[in-house]
Amino acid sequence: MKKSTLNYIIDIIIAIAFIVSAVTVIVLAFNPHGGGSGFGGGRGFTRAQPAAGLTANIQVWRDIHTVFSILLAAGALGHLMLHLKWMKCMTVNLFKKKKNSGTKEACSNI
Image 1 (cartoon, rainbow, N blue to C red):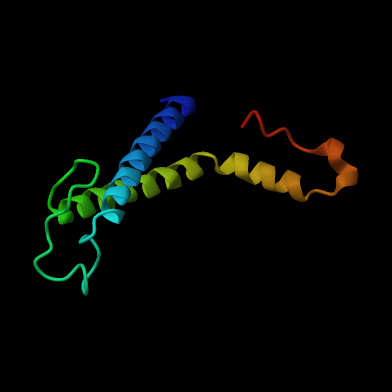
Image 2 (image 1 turned 180 degrees about the horizontal axis):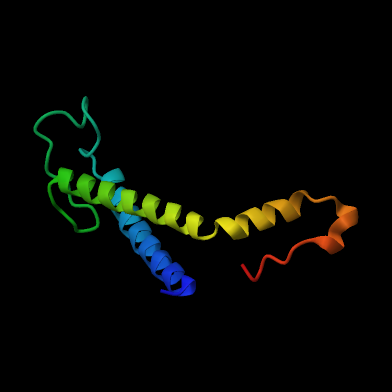
């Protein structure tokens, strides 16, 4: 598989995971009984209040959020690993002395 195709697939996975994670955190944040233990989130409050017209067991929302957040983190790590050479090149170029700027390596081909 070409590196550009793999990069595209990883970027799509990251985008989808980000969107799902963002939506679920909004639903959890606006759910008055979706917090942890204690006042407002104690026993008996396992059903989400209507948030944007969506209702479900609050644990389902948490599970979806957790899975897609892990997928997002794994995708971001994969994306960084795919670009290690480019990041190294850019870092070296950034810290080279300014008077030697003509000897900087071109990083766009990496």
